[in-house]
Structure formats: C-alpha cells, structure tokens
Length: 377
Image (cartoon, rainbow, N blue to C red; front, side, top):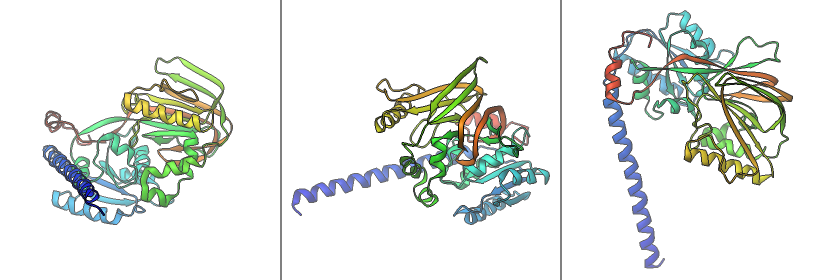
C-alpha cells in the first residue's frame, strides 16, 4: 500500500467519522429540544389501556419500560391487553373501552395502530402510539418519534392531540363482511397488494421497507387489471372510467413513505382521500418512467408526472369515495395488512373521526394545550 493510498484512506476515515459525529450531535440536539418541549406538556391522570402486539421482537422489553415509566409518573390506572391471532387490535380496543379506559395506546406497528384506530373512530376517546414496528408509517406522518420510547410515551399520556381522518375499505362482494376495514395511510389493490403479500417476513424484519422492492421486482410483468372506477371528487362531481387498464389503484390518507412521496397532496385531516391510478407500458422502460415520476413529485412536492415520462401513468384525484369493480379477483391491502381477494370494493373517508395524541411543534401551542380542560383529548 503506497503513501497516497494511505493518505486517501485516512482522509476517507476522518470524513466518515466526522459525518457520524455530526449526525450524533444533531440527534442529541434534537433529543434535548424534544425533551424541553415535552416537559411543557401537562400529564393526563386518567385510565390508560396499552394494546401490545407481543409478536414484535422488542414487545416484552417495551412493556417493562412502559411499566417503569408509568410508575415513575404516578400513573396507576393502567392495563395491558395483548393482541392474538384471533383477537386483533380492534377487539382489544373495544375490550379496553368496555373496561373503562379513557385513552387507548397502540404499542406495535402500523397493523396494530390501524386496528386500534378502527375501534376508536367516532368514540371521542384519544389514541396514543408507541411505535415498535418495522415501517411505522403513520407514526412518521404524525411526527411521533420512532427511536425514543420515553418521548413517545410522554406524548401518549399528556394533553396535545389532533383530529385525523380515517379511511375505510368495504369488500362489497364478500357476504361475510361485517365492517369496513380501516386504514390511516394507504389502501390499495393490484400490484402494491401483491408486492406486500409476497414480501419475505424475514427480509422485512431485517431490511424494513426495502424488502418490498425485492418482492416487487418479481411481479413487474404480471398481467394488468381492467376495472370500472367511479369516484366522487372533492367538488362532489362524479367521475366514471369504464374498462380502465391499471396495475394498481390506491387510496391515501397520508402520502409520505420513507424517502419518497407517493401522494404529495394527501393530508390526514382534509376530509378527503387521494385516489391514484398507476399503469406502465413498454416493459422496464415503463417502470423506469414510473420511478422517475415518483422521484419528480417527491422533489417538487406536487402530484404531477415528470415531463420526461412517456410509458407510465400516475393519475391522482382527491375525493370522498371511490367504487371499483374489476374483471377478476384481486388482492387488496390496508396499511400493509392483507384482505381477501375481491372484485368489487368501495373506499370511503370518515372526516376527523379519530383523536390522536401527537407532538406539538412549538412552545406557544404547548402552552395553549396545557389549558385544555378535555380529559380525553
């Protein structure tokens, strides 16, 4: 190894160490600011129910930390309910409410949050979130810290909330359906659902959302779907497309995922859903165009295709509901949870149906929130 190589490697190591140190400094600074802000919040001494997904690797450790936190805070009315294969977060949350819980806190990933939210919607009971999943997309969109359980707990057990819209998916061709399936982020049919369903759980556990790309690559050339789509738009006009060719149809309440923006106009409290039709032609060129479209709208923050796209379709429309009837059964997903195959379904929104405890961005709002008399908010 010559002297120039040694110097170059030394410079690279110093640069990497400097970047790591800078990131550590910024994280520490952010943590201190978060602590200072959260200390301004007023504790809410009410009855809490923690709904925990025990399948998460850190579930047992997280429960011990929650118990220690509650003891230190003097929170004595606390119960823990674990989800099971035949008892999801929706059932657990109803059990918690029947038991007198004032605030229900979902401890898990997006699936646990989604099912707990399904039961709390419209009840005026607040929901807290302690994220311990792999994606935690809803927590990300709400600004709830993913790497600081104590901070997430402080948010969950103190005043400071926002009202959030809730999406619903009804499978109209399933006679056994007894309720609409809730979603807080994105629900979809077609390619996105197939990709999620085929993702290796071990890869997802180790590589988080990146595992979806490996699964998606296997289905790039799967046959397209043909559908009749009816959308009630934001201006209450009705738009109908018959025989529409597509690879996927999605409805979004939040549009931000790690790194990318799938639906830049989506807002969790505007009373609307963002509907998106995706299609590609031209083989790999079409998928490359589609990727360029997503990058373009991530950078511009606008729901528009890249002007360079010629072999992809990324059409978006805001509205209150959408009904889709397909030419053959297709997989569907809500926030990453799979639903039975369906040919006929409806997406709808329940405006501001859910109260979620969230961090507040500045001291003025924290001070104002401290004066709120409502126990459940």
